[in-house]
Image (tube, rainbow, N blue to C red; front, top):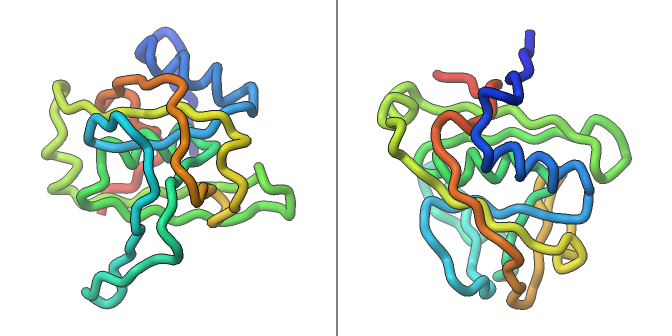
Amino acid sequence: MKHKKIESLMSPAKQRLLELEKTGKYFFHGSPDEIEKFETRQASNWVSGVKEKDGEPGVFASPSIDYAIAMSLLTTNLDVITSAESKEAEKFTIRFFVSQDTFKSLNPETKGYVYIFNKDDFPIKNGPSEFKSLVPVTLLEKSIVTKKDLPEYIEIK
């Protein structure tokens, strides 16, 4: 059973990000690194232990704040499974799986960055939880997140 966090226990950063997410006007990019310019980069996936290019170079963002937060704090060993719930673009579920070692390596000082963009800058749907721009995009705002901002529904394996 999923439990909602009590808003008073959330960090002010996550509260603000959730407010932005609710408007439907913004997309979010999560990274463990501080980034100044968002230019296109080659994405890749690991397939059977081999790193393979994933489509054309681009800038990626998500309508889901939980997706961006997880990517900012757990990118070293995070399996993300997204699935569409309906034919509507904004309706999807996300399941996160992370190794016990990776989760244990997080401490209260571990931080990640969530970058906020205009939704209209990402015209290409790259999957249920990810959109893409083939040109550089302009950052509107950034927010620092910590372990306490992670989604509650991360499965430790």
